[in-house]
Amino acid sequence: MRKWLEFVWPVVGVAALAYATYLLFKQLHHVSFHKLAASLAAIPAGGWAMAALATIVTFALLAAADLVALEHIGRKLPPAFVGAVAFVTYAISHNVGATVITGGLVRLRAYGTRGVGAAEVGLVATLCAATYVLGVLSVGGAILVLAPDMVNRAFDLLPLWLTHGATQLSAGGSRIAGLACLGAVALYMGAALLHLPPLRIGSFEIVYPRPWVALQQVVLGPLQVVGAAAIVHFALPHPFNPGFPAMLGVFAIAYSAALLSHAPGGVGVFEIVFVKALPEVNQSALLAALIVFRLFYFLVPLAISIVAVALFERARVASMLRGDDAGAPT
Figure 1 (cartoon, rainbow, N blue to C red):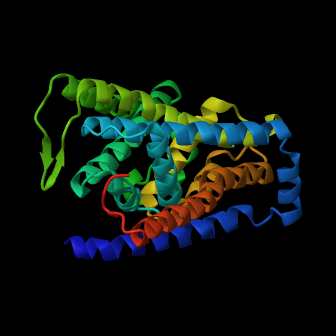
Figure 2: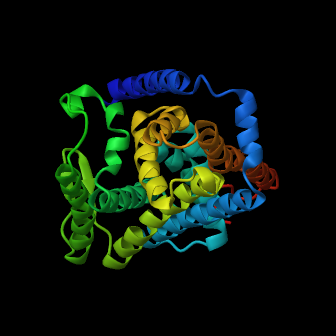
């Protein structure tokens, strides 16, 4: 079964990428390169600076999730080292996809040099993924309750088998879905407070962390989503910006869809949700803001991480050549 899924998910990802690219081209074929270049040039210097700052804050919050996960397994590593590992981990996993798997491999290589075992690294990767899921549930749930019409902005992108032919979700239905999301977060926190035994779903097991760890997850998760959405918000000039609440809601939907699509880096899927969900926004300005997001959140971190990995591996080889124990903590 697992081997079959390993074959299916890449196919699903490529299909999602192809379909999203087709939809994106169909939606934006009228946007010329000249318009796009003009929209990028129209982003004020302050917008670029704030988008860059939002990126730094978001990656710091992602690194904090690693520190919390390491605290859960009883490992205390230098924050600077954890921050560097988390940066490289997310830079690579955001671009490659399969976040838990790719993130686990990168962490295993780095944290393994400090004596952290494979099982522990797997738990760290799972807890970090859980932190983000809690963030999406919290933000998405709050938006569905407070702005129930938000989900209808991208409702027509959902498959027919999921919508049962409906053209939109009622306000009551949105609020119920939002309360369910918030309820899931509350249940997670309650299970941690009550020290409930692990939840087993087939061979999958959810081990609830200690209350203090769970509380940090519930706080960090939404902040991660808010920070990432702020990158797009600051890159979209004020005349075209629908406001941060709308931007946050669309971002939560778009990024979740990108992750679920299994498309590499969510390319195309993320963009088409934004374009369809914000039809009132100038399309070239919105596309320019999304390019800035791709640049700051994906491409620049990936370039930096490649250099960081190369330097790390060079240091490890040099250590081995000197006769040091490559597997010992450093």
